[in-house]
Length: 467
Image 1 (spheres, rainbow, N blue to C red):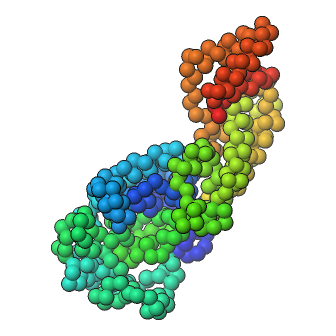
Image 2: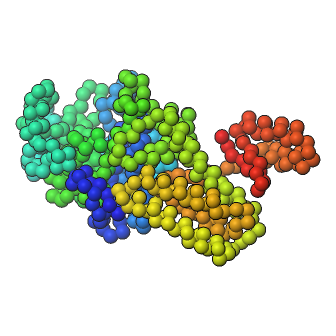
Image 3: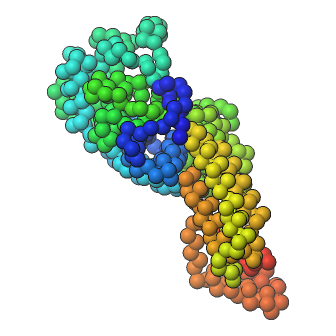
């Protein structure tokens, strides 16, 4: 398995620190509102990376945080006249609902920044003891960027070039030793939540939060650190500096970053009027469609969101669902149990699609090519199964389709529970058709349609689905 490492700017063979185990940290959202579809891309992408690692037999310790103390959270709390904690907890709950609807698996651990303050104070204290951090008169603590000699190794930025850039803009924190030094701890402002520290009553800088949570739940060294490419600098660069200065070890072996999401070829922004939350998209599409759309391009590529592309994703997903439903339906209605010899050859012939799928995913998680392999497999199934196929063949083909789709987080069969009235209507319609009472049969079809149930009469019997 090869992964593209932002650190080296090339694909590298994936070799975990500990055989059979993967320690993975993904930066989570700041919870001050509903998550937007830009937030959704790394959630879906790195959930899929995790799923494929597990498919390959790795035990994955997957940590993704919630930033629950931040200027935006405090601003929202002030606007609503409630506590920052109430805002963050509300939107953590909403975020978890959206993640569930996108079939993003819960992390092994979802740490909250506010519950890890003790660890942050300890790490900052350690950095000060080692000379990597210093406090100024108002209690702000800064990291000495130039003291960490490898600063810039992830973003490939040169400190002197950064320094020149800072000269042309207003430098905040005039009491800093160097304009490139960044905040580890800052004093509270009036009305803000705060914690006691040796330096002042205040709260942590953003960057220190992830370093501490990764250290606590995964250790000093981790296999994979991931997030959106907008986090490479300064967030991930600063995480490396803090963690490696404190721990004296390489922080993360592989750095994975997903590309930007544009809306109709424009950057998403509220001022452009093209800002969409996941909840808003969920009002128009099943969020499985959003997930399928997100995986239709390579994760490192920019991705353009549009209604046309979402409709295309919906059609593609429906092709897969229809093939799966056909296999399930035929399996329920066949009289044959075991595979015949020619069916065993058919089953063996489907191995090639698994190989194509794995080859794509082994090449830096190329989900676009993996989906192509699934489409080829769908065509193979549609072409080769029939009413006389054995249950063993049909079930085997279905289970294989389900296994591959599960890696991508695509659900083939949601548990459908028809209430007694709908079951009675379908049975009544069948009886009406047998009695050639087609007017009543059509009437029942219309009633079911109003309830969101579409019937399809096939040679194999009546099929139904929700719309």
